[in-house]
Image (cartoon, rainbow, N blue to C red; front, side, top):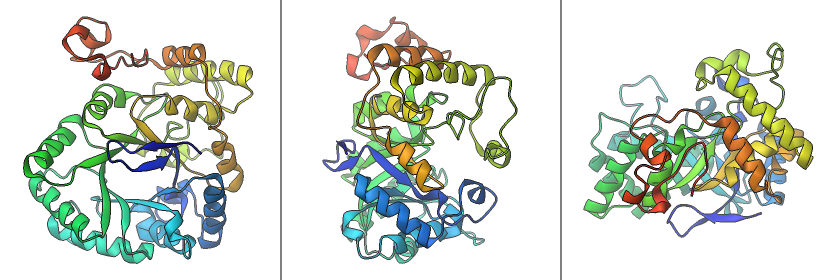
Length: 352
C-alpha cells in the first residue's frame, strides 16, 4: 500500500481509504447506500487492514450515528491500527443547536462521536459543510481547543468553496491556530469541478484532497450504458436526487473511453476511475465504498499499477468540460506567466 502525506501535515495516509457510509443503512439515502451490520463491518475491516487500508471515514449523520457506532465496534481491540476520520456540521437532531459549527455544537458533537466510536481521540475531524452563521475565528478557536485537549489530532473540511477554505486558512495563520490540512471533496472523471479552484488552492496552501464518490455517484461502475435503461439494482433510482448532476452524453463519452482503456489494461472500469484520480495533483487518498466483499476487493485492485500517459490523456479529453470564467485564461495559456506553474492547473488537460 502506497502512503502519501496529508497536505503539509507531516502525517501519511494510505492512498485508499474506506468510506463507512454503507454501515448501518438507516434513512432514505443511507439505506440505498448499504446496510452493513457489525458482523459484516468486522469482515470488511479485516480485509481493509490486511490490504493496508487503515483510513476509515464516517460522519455523525451517516445512518443517524449508526455508521460511527458500527465502525467503533468493528475496530474494537485494534484501534491503534486505524486512522479514524469523521465529520460534523450537518443537522443531527431536532434541537436548534443540533446543526452548524458553533462552539456548543463542536464540543458536544466531538464528545458524542468519541462515545459512538469507542475511542478517546479522532485522528482527523472534518467540518461537513461551511457554517456561514458562525465566525470562522470562533470555529477555529474551538477546534484548536479540541486539538490541544487531545480529542482531535488533525483538522479538515468537506464541501467548502475556495473562498470559504481560504478565509479559514488565513484566519488560522493570523491567529496562530491549528490549520486545516485536508479537504474531503467530490471528484471523479464525471465531476471535475474540484480542479477549477480547489486544486490550485490545495497546491498553494498544502491541503490534501480526500476524494469522495470517485465513481461519480455510481455512474462509473460499468453498469450504465448508452441506449440502455438504468439497471434495476442501481442505487441511482433512490439517490439520483442527492447526486451532483451529470450530462448523459458526457457520461457515455467517458464510459466509452474507459472501455477502450479497460480492453488495453484488463482492468475493471471502477479500477480505472480510481487509478486516474490517484495520478491527479493534491490527491492524498481516495475513499472507496463497498456493500460486500466482492465489491471491496475489486476496488482494492485500483492500486499496484498505473495508467499510461496516453491513457490518462484520452480519459482527460473524454471527461473535459468548458472552463468557466475567470479560469479559462489560465487554462488556455493567456495568464500562465503571471503565476508559478505549480499553481496553474489546466482542467481537462491535466496539470503541468
